[in-house]
Length: 493
Image (cartoon, rainbow, N blue to C red; front, side):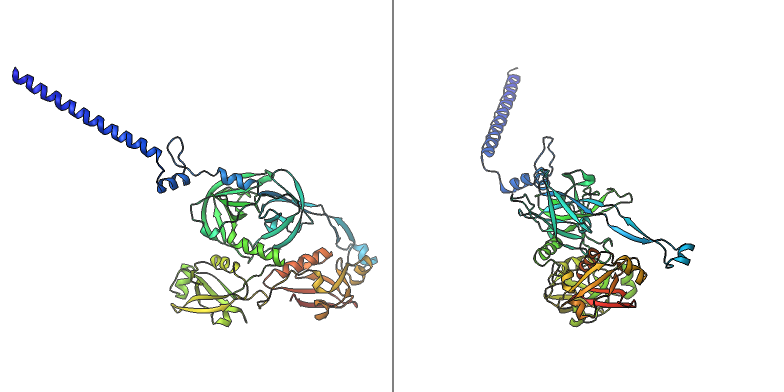
């Protein structure tokens, strides 16, 4: 019995001792936690919390509310109006016209209806410069901009570039406008969160979220223009064109431009022009009124597995040179047909879209190093890039003044004489390109670069388009004063 009590006493002592130790340990841990909460957090934990704030349910999410708030105030609604115009059409000749008329049919004047388009734009500076898509304002006689606070202003076109589908407009106000800070689209990563901000379906200040799905996408929608899109699954719809693609910090990283859909509405992916291209284009339009575009002087495309097997190139990455232009920068430097461009100033080039994007950021006259693969061996070439006119001089905005001529639409009597239903008559020629290339007073211009010339605005539009193209030339067809067919080629230099 005595032994039993002794064993019981020892068991109680062990339990009591264990409890005291456990309680003391818990106390110390609790005290340590209390002290830790009053201290400054460690840098690593602070950065993590700042980037991914914890929600009440314990999950970590990206907070895009600040980026959205910055963006909606700097994204505007753009309305473009093309006024109705009077067109003259000629009906097929009937029997009466054949015997008693001129055999050309009867003329009829038709008044076209005004066309109104809508889109978005992004304010780039507090003094009212706004970037949008060229297709939003193309052909517009009037442009108006509505801010997020519902104030509306008339806008003037500073310049446009169809090759990149970008345009710059300007509004005048004494107020300092909210604007977006331009970020570096080159730093975007696949999977990074972005917001698309714009005015789809005329619903102003709409924000959608998604991730960067791909970079340097080429879709073939610009008919030979420069394409290196950011692909995103943030919803982009009609009316979003010209709006902002922003990162989680609220920085502008792209201009929404294209949606890919079999229905014409959002069906999974949208595409934006990266700011790496936009910054250069906007700067050129603002300073010169025309883009200073660097040209390498090659024809080619992205290397594919099939092309590699067919030509035994030794690579499935890069740009295959199918031809080089005469007197171009590439040919002058020694680059040949059959070469594969794999690096540009040391930066790897995998696709034609990447090469186009890199060139779009470069000014004519820049000396660059181009690495090619020839016979499966790398060769380096120093290339001096030129502009679309084959030199390194500044390309200025070209308007009708450079032609050195005056024009007016032909009247009914002249239409009957020349047996045509439209045309622009050259009513005077002074010092300018027309005089230089032999276009004389009295010539009636019917078509320029394949476009019908009914109004002076038609000619102005074609001149601007030609100036921003890779072949800045006017191909003119028409009649001289005696009614004989004439053709002219007028380079815009």
